[in-house]
Length: 541
Image (cartoon, rainbow, N blue to C red):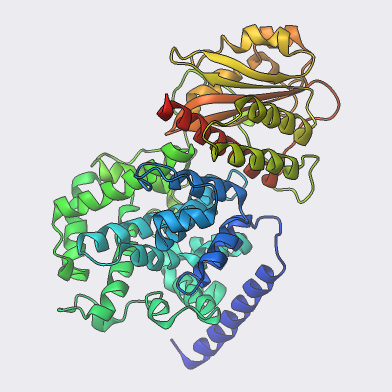
C-alpha cells in the first residue's frame, strides 16, 4: 500500500465513521431496527453498566424484556422456582452476566428473523450470534469465562452489522469487489477500513474497557499459533479463531468430509493451544446449534429463515449443504456474487400458500395501531402471573380487549390448545364471535388454508386484504360465511417451540390492517407472558 493510498483510506475511514455516528445520533430511522440501538448500548456498556442501567436498557424493548423475564422463570435458569416479574429480579435471581448475554443473544436473534431487515442484516446478525456462541463453547471447555468470550466474539461483527444497516448499497458493492480483490482491499476501497477496524474504532470512541477492546482487532501475526498463549491474549485468540472457524463453515463449496479435514488443519495452524481434534470441533458446532435451537423453541423463532444457521446446522450434523442456500453476509466462495440463488420452500401442508400471507410488518414510522394499549394488558398480565392464584378471566378479557382496541378490529378470540390438540375459545369479543366459535375449534395443521399455514410453520399470519388476488381461496369457507372479512390476523402462542394457543382478529370493513414494528413487538411480548402463565398453570396442576 502506497503512502498516497494510505492517506486516502484514512480520510475515507474517518468519513465512514462520522457518517455512522451521525446516523446513530439521529435516532430511529427507516431500516434501523430498535434492537440495533439496544445492541449499541449493551455493547458499549457491557462491562461497566450497573444493574439498574442494564434493566433500564433491556426494558426499552418490550419483546426482549418479556423473553428475559420468561427465561428467568424457567427451570434451566431458575431451578428454585423463585417468581420473577421484572428484569431487576431476573438479574438478582440468575445473575448479572447471564442476563446481559441473554439480552444480547436475543437482540441478535431478533435481527435474524426481522422480516423487514435486508438479507444481509439477517445473515450478519446470525453470524455474530453464531461466532459468539462458538467462542462461548470453546472457552467453557477450557474452564475460562464463557460469558466474556461470547461478548468479545460477537462484537467483532458490530461494524459489519452497522454497515448493513446504514450503507447497504455500498456494502453490497464491497461484497461484489471482494470476490476478485479479497475482502480487506474491497472494504478499504469502499469504506476506507475493514469491518473489524470499524468495530474497533466505534467501540473505542464509546470508551469500551481496554482489555475488551483489544479483543476486537485483527489478530497480530505474532499471536498466530504462538505457544504458549499468554492469559491476557487467550481471549483475543479464541474470539478471532471462533469468527474464522465460522467463516470457514460458510464455505458452501466444501463437502462434509472436506470441511472436517480443513477445519482440523485450520485449528492446528491457527489455534493449536486449544488442542481440538475433529470430534471436539464437531461438538463445538453442535453446541452452537443446540443453543440457537433452544432460542428458537423457547421464543418461537424461525430456524430456517437464516442461511447462516442452516449451514451451521448442516456442519453440526455432518450433512451436505442444501443447494438452495446463498450466503450474503460474508465474502469468498460463499459470497452473494457466487451463491445468490432462489430459495426453495420446504414442503408442508401449507407450502403452496402465497408468501404474501406471511406476517411482514412494514417498517413505517407511523401506523394506525397503538402499542401502548397492548402494553397496558401486559402490565395486568405480569401482575397476575406474580399471584398465587391469577385471575384468568381478567387476564383473558384484558388481552382480547387490548387486541381489539390497539388494532381497531371488529372481532377477536383467544384460544388455548387442550390435551387432545383441539383449540378451545377462552374469550371472544365482537358480534360474530358466537358464529365463528364452531369453525375456530375445528382448525388443524393439516388444512390447506391460513390456519394450516400458521400451525404448520408456527408463524404469525396476516391477511391485509382478503379481497385482493387469489388470497380469498386460502380463507376457510366457514369464516367467510359467518362474518364479513377484509383483514385477518392469526398469532400463535408458543411454549418450547410448540403452539399452545392462538390469538385471532378480524377487521370486517374499512382500510386493510397494517401493523408497525412497535405494535408487533408488543404483541410478541403479550404472548410470551401469556405462555408463561399457562406454563405455570401446567406445572401447578
